[in-house]
Amino acid sequence: MVFRDKVVEAYQKIQDEICQGLELADGKTFFEEEIWNREGGGGGRTRIMQHGDVIEKGGVNFSAVHGKLPNAVKKAFKVESEDFFATGVSIVMHPGNPLVPIIHMNIRYFEMDDQTRWFGGGIDLTPHYIIDTDVRYFHHLLKQTCDEFDPSFYAKFKTQADDYFYIKHREETRGVGGIFYDRLKPENSGLSFDQLLDFSVAVGNTFIPAYTELIERNRDKEFTEKEQEWQYLRRSRYAEFNLVYDAGTKFGLETNGRIESILMSLPPLAKWVYNHQTLPDSPESYTQSKLKKGIEWA
Image (tube, rainbow, N blue to C red; front, top):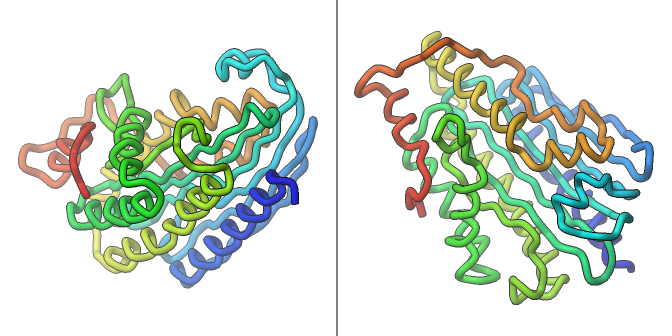
């Protein structure tokens, strides 16, 4: 089997398993699927869950696209070739309860030729309210996954997540990070491409145990109107990052991707309140104080 076909098969399986796990965790609603084709080559499966018992809006998307790279992307990637192939699974979950965190995952493979190909991806968590035990649990699972392949991966990829998921104009991180890696290949990872595929799959398989545990811990907690208003403010920061800085959003738009699938990461409802200030010694103030790089959670 051609290597890219192995990646496609593995990623489609991950999409299926994560959708099944999230439907069981939510217990009320199911994913709606839309099969789409991309003008220029390839397509994907967009799966959206809305109005659930836990998930207010979420997407688990698979795509495998190919064609010609626009000049802007060639320049950003620092490559000369035009023909490309890219496949991946991208997930964002926006829960209804502000005590359940937003979660994002992306695993992807990019190829131009045998000499120019790599893996990228990661998982990160964006709590509306930071609960230290939840964050430590999340980071511990990610460290376990990384350690199975290389003991240096977690620390390196956690730092890259802190740097990447940073809202520069706010001088704060989007959430509590996780892991983020890009352009992984044998030369810079010490792993073969088959091993890198195994690592990518392992990251994907960490999603359900990580998120379903956080759902079960928090889904039945009562919340106030004030806490929901704070959730809408935190969602607005999430939207700002995705629209201003997110590389996946830019790549999708610049390669004539499917708009609905690209922008499924945006929350169903968010608010921008002028000059909002948190009260001292409040849960909101505590959360704000933890939106920094370099916090050791694991």
